[in-house]
Length: 124
Image (cartoon, rainbow, N blue to C red; front, side, top):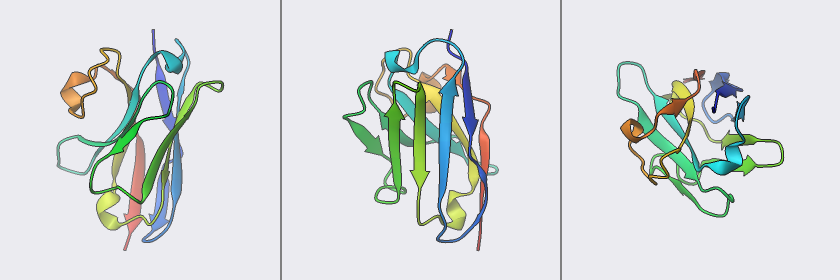
């Protein structure tokens, strides 16, 4: 069983940086592609970034491309999201998700394994 726990959220000013981490207390994360999603206030959960099992292939939402970097350390069983040049519109609860179905999807409904989320707030 995969149990995911996010950390690293907080309050930051526009232009600042944060690094989110996702760890598993159960099955090793290296078995799965992983993704980050976010849910802004009053909006639907949206795709942010995805990484394959080896870490060699990544893809990003257009809104974060060039500012966010997803990475993984399979030896430490963690996945991270480095967020730079943050904007107020990045304010959301951020979730990591395991792609246990190997769907290669960017749609949140195709994922069934989630962490509890971590709040990121970017002040203007």
